[in-house]
Length: 326
Image (cartoon, rainbow, N blue to C red; front, side):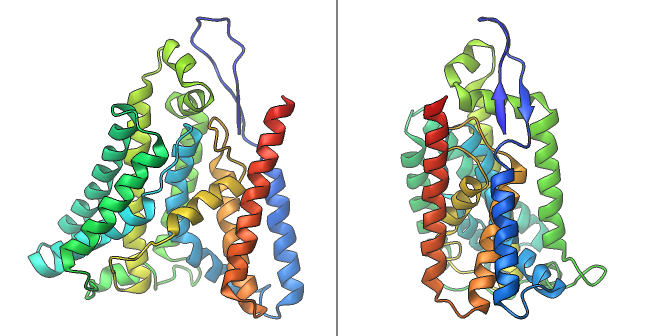
């Protein structure tokens, strides 16, 4: 997705959003991967396998939506995997040890994720730390707190209602967690396309100083996207708990890299101002197809990491080349 401004200097910019820019390449790559594995793996091209792929990428996808908003503004969030674990452990601690009813405990867990995002946003905007350093600090703190709450023990005994979110299939196809992820994709896509606040994120990522001079409250928006990313990380933590039926302090380890990979593979620019939820969805599915396909053809686990690393390098190099030509 690109942002173009055609207003005279000093005027409040109006944005023309091209939702298809940068999406076709990843989409063609996704189709090519799917066709390749359909020929290589006997049971890959089935409805059941497609359903499993969607189930497996739901947690990554929720994280990647928040990461997309952050990257569009020109930032990065390394804390999402740790916040996932921190929020899930907080919810489990309140429910299992303190004895709080599950719904209030869940709300507190999501709020904790938002607070962690608020800390990152404040460090970026007021302390003027680079997003990489600010979120690295938040990542370390939240991972430590996740261990401290339960002395590193596993939290289990989640209520059956939570487990059913990832086990019961409506119409025999889709679980509640996957449905929530897809609805979140549609809602965020509509926000970025139709709401002025969504378009302002692209303006900030393109040039924060110009956005500020145009009257956009840059600090507010930057803090907001980190808060949203933190809250979504907490929700992803609960989706992960519903899938595994347990939570432990080291859940989500490395998930931040997968989320960043999905966003970048989906066509977003780490320089900010470019990205789309549709592209992120494609990036998440590419990772899911790789995981499933490589497993079915008997490839080693680290083969996936090598391929994803190459894809990230290629996507960033391509984006850099395009920017230089402009």
